[in-house]
Image (cartoon, rainbow, N blue to C red; front, top):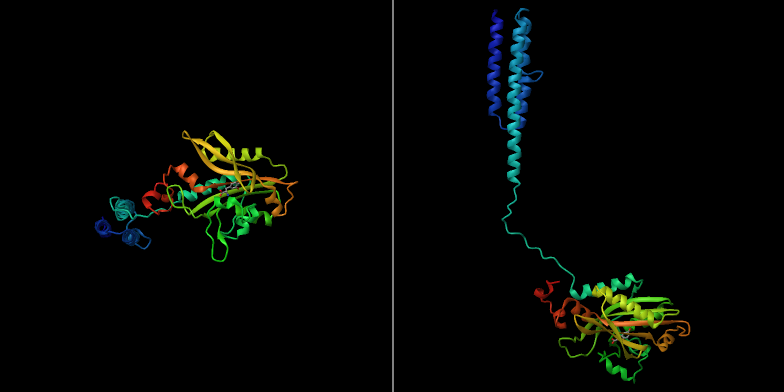
Length: 334
Ligand code: DAH
């Protein structure tokens, strides 16, 4: 065996030992890659040693070649093993650094919600929109004309006593009902008309469990050729079934409103009691004439009801004042 063979064998053994040490000592994947290139790369240590192979006698070459291969594979194995370990450690460290502490107190973020009165009005409006009605609005500060006069209620009319009114110093008033929107809308539009008009109203009522000086109504109005009381009844029936979620006994009681003829009040039997839920009627021909409609051609029906009343019945609220109390303990229930 020549010296060169011995020399190369020693070099290979030393190379293997050195590489094993370096691989074990490294702690990063980047460094590990540098080590790989340093030993096994094209210009790496192993290549350098093998460069000396040419000096060997032909008979020695296969043995040394095989030895070189063994060293190469051994180093490669060490590299692979270390790479796996380092990768696993890296993932572990990442998982640990990203761990959520589920016992940490959460940041409280209150979520707002619709006020029961608003959600009730929304539901009512949605039902009528579903029936083809358009939403209409009018001002809360009204003239005597729109609130009374045009609704067939002149100044000396006894029906004015039905609605105790807040008058403003300039002679205007705070609307006592949403019926004023009927007139405003009819003045601006031609029949056929179907509107639903929700809004705030004001009356000089003494505040108690069922009365509030500020309250909300929803008004509906339909004008067309050939509308009859049957259409009114059918519409109200469908609406009440929708809002109460079931078919309930209802009754129409003859009543009086200056702007409708005939007029009725509607009661619905709910949880064993008759509840009065709205006023309604066929639009009085005088009202149609006031806005320039021909009562010989057009007829229509109207209805108005208190939104608070519906909210209270639907949510079993016992006192109207709770709806205006801003008491979060109350409001959070809805
Ligand atoms: N505006 C009436 C009130 O506030 C309610 C009402 C009755 C409205 C009959 C109507 C109706 O549209 O036809 O007491």
